[in-house]
Image: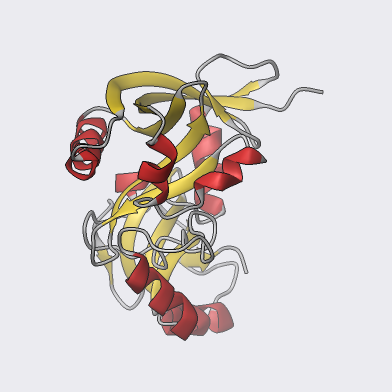
Length: 240
């Protein structure tokens, strides 16, 4: 039975073509491009040299290079500009489409509409939040957030492939367990605050859908709240 899928509007698609495209990406993004020998897509990030979040995207291998499914509009422009900075004299071609429709299921990202039952974006978005998965700039502070804060330090990172831009901080935080805060899914008794709101004695509000939202929270405070919360709590932390 075909998997269910969702339509993701306002995405961008950046293509990188040419023989050196593999090495170009491998040297700058957080995940291992060689995984595409066995995986349809990989989730990866572009970081500042100091290891802070700039962009995340899903990489697919094409006949002539690679395609990056990323945030649309101005975010696509920004990613393309940053990739061009690293291009220098490398004989590759980088092209961008700012606003495209992407289809996603549990297995892959694609530009052609797949078979299966389509679920609404709202249902997909709520499921994403419940799993504490960030949605790009909706949940990250550009140039400030770490991958550990965004819960991306496992899924979108290779710790074995070698160096890439920002690798030192990511590896140090991982090896020394330095991540003091991260995104936590929560159920609100009423409407969640707007993104960017500081919730007293709890954390910083990020994206939400209906009465479910993500909070950037100190891990010690998270442990305290999990110990004391009840089903009637104004904010009830989900997950483990």
